[in-house]
Image 1: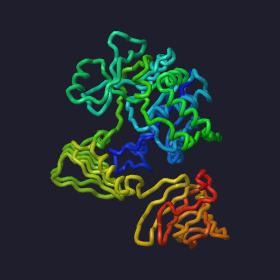
Image 2: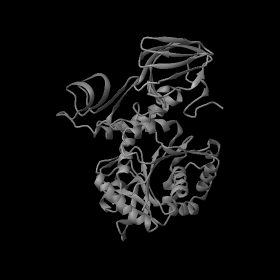
Image 3: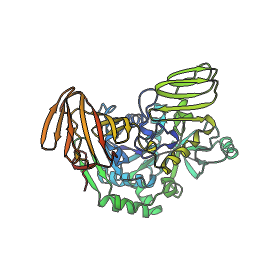
Image 4: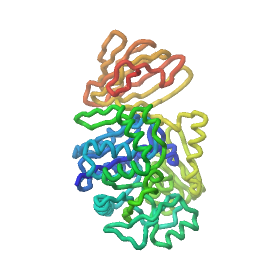
Length: 480
């Protein structure tokens, strides 16, 4: 039986700011073991029996970063496909788009396993066993959710109530979905024994989920179908990619798969499981991945502590010192620091909302920004000048472009650069440079087998990243 894991990678994770940002969201956060959440999800999915392909639904701006992260762990070169959303329309749209694509490419009898890119599962053996049970139920026509065995009365999760007297082979029929409860209600759910945390993971037969969507959410599936009809599907030796048309996709209703389908269908079952699951929904959850010292402190990076207890510090770039403090979260990045009491970990999102309201870029970008061709790091930003460190991957090339308002001076630090500068094509080596005037078309390419590193000094009246006119681009970013 064909199984296609569908990885949904669309959340920002605002509670994990300042590490998680819109252009570098939660799935790309590196954990203490060196892997990030999206890599762990990909590996976990790829190890399941019967997997023939992995389909990822993500924002089109994150395609190349996702490709890089998968490439670092995809040693078996498992087949991949992508659906690129121009903007988020919640999980019902993502699931409908995936199901319609899989029906076309694999047929209605294939099964899809819907996974969130930003969840952590620590017991893979138990997870694989739960998937096996879910696939058996899905083959019988059930829409299957994975119910996590609750270990404490959590008020931040939704719950699934299972019918006590309707056991299925490998699972239970779902009586209802319930919203996030207050503490007293959550405690009653734990005592009842037939309530489970709603994990947001699902398993369906492709034909079944489309039939149920057409019955319970016909507006969603029809709008997605129309968007796919006018969208661009491309194939290469690396992956199949559907880039959804923005105008058509804007007509799709913004609604979760729970509200649109799972709460309405009578064909919903749950597989209860204890798989070491966490949605990594706050810095408190992240801190649990690090072992505490004798004072209950958990540290990532170089930290000194005196008379301090039960703190978590994530500070990889510089020394942090704690003196006489307790129960704090200290998250330090090169351009922003967040300090919160552990009891208010969920309130970090309010700071992100304030940053958005005042158009501050630190909710969106890190100082180091990933691009399809490599990265750039802003070293200094002053009035009428900006200094960047640019790293171009072997064989990669920036677009042929022009700036109206700024000139640029490029100095090669290491590697070799092929530069188009107006009418000239130059090859630059270490310690060599070129000056590009405003209004001149230019391009930068790394022809070598090692990273090209250079320093860029910008000067001009306006230094915004939107002062770029692209004429040619290897990554489909040419302006219309």
